[in-house]
Image (cartoon, rainbow, N blue to C red; front, side):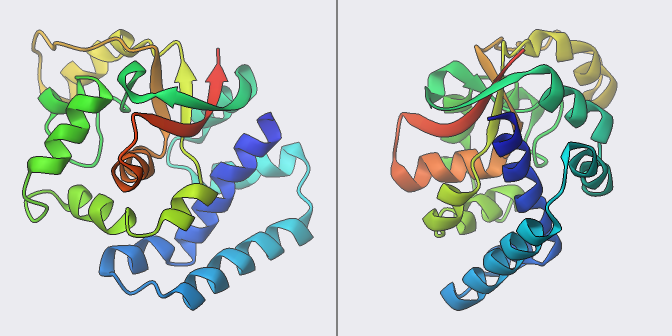
Length: 202
């Protein structure tokens, strides 16, 4: 299952390189174009037949923090699961420019903020609202979660990024490792209390 989780991550990153994220944000991703992008990426990925070392090299090319991502994929045991959203929190110390006071809470609190804020005020909220119109994309590219969440350990980084403060960090069972936007869009699209995801146990 570790290979499937890595493949899922790399395929989405390759789709982003082909412009799928930009098209979604613009609202210009037609069904034919979506299929064209996804099928092209999947076909080329399959034909490349990457071994594990080559996948890690590709991850280094595509990821902004490849050493961390590599460690997470290699040191966790992975399974596809359905998880209650109340058990989760977003990535820290940043998520799409949303206020740090919001993302330090649990995922339902972040979702409530996203539902009620003006999308023009936060670019990432506008993207989430655009993304939820593509449930087939959300079903194909699942977010990944790590457990235990250990979000409290991010306090030092929160202080460095946002200024020293007694942050009220909710230390959830799991923390989103990749796919914050896709996770929230999936929940909003399905109006669900659970999320389909890859879970990595440390």
